[in-house]
Image 1: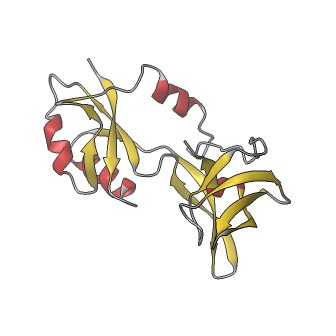
Image 2: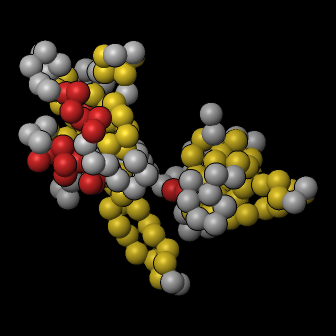
Length: 167
């Protein structure tokens, strides 16, 4: 029975892993979205993985030579429970694909759906991996966070797509 499984990739190697998996005859799926990128005082939109460092592959564990996946360029490992890969819940990939627009990207809502005091982690930029408290939405798709820097709380404004809830 064909099911979808999760592949963990090396950092920034999602496209490389998907390409090499496809060359081996596997059906890989890398959901993407349009990310705002800031570079050299310029802002542009680029495609980025919806789930950084992860992609999906469709397999029949009884028929496919799935053990070769772990040695594929760009692949770190398959998400598994012991020796057997763990399948994605039925319908999850269909739900993601149903959200894709005509360009094949998954639209991401850029609203700040956080409450005051929520812990957020910064996912890119100069303050990557810092955890702060959500204070308020700001102008133009930005949020205000309170970060502990050098022993005191500092207010910073970061793009809303650069933060995620901290678990």
